[in-house]
Image (cartoon, rainbow, N blue to C red; front, side, top):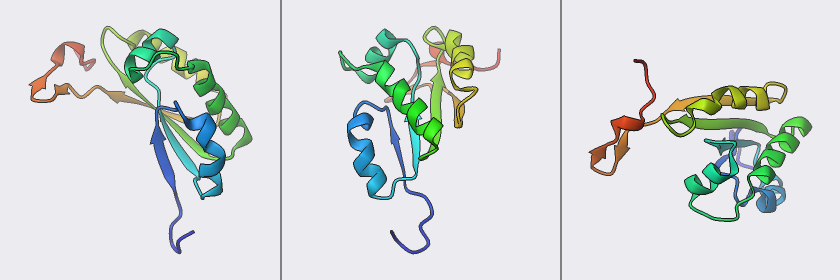
Length: 124
């Protein structure tokens, strides 16, 4: 540990977190930001662009780490029109009794050089 360093954090989609968490914790990790934009397994696979990812294991890591209070946990959920805006209350329900902070983040409508305003879920 470095003097004056209070937080060692990682941001992850959780795909390898189950396997790496013990070593990361041993190395001093004390905070995790989990990017989790959906609780629907098929949508999760679409977002991370990998078949066979086990969304339920990501949820299990969230619950285990949160319940055991091993780490500061934060979930970042990017809300997108036509994709996951119907899941906001599901996220609240899933995390309401866990020591986890959930941030709903507005989608940034940029894809390389072009704007993608059609999926922006902002104020009407």
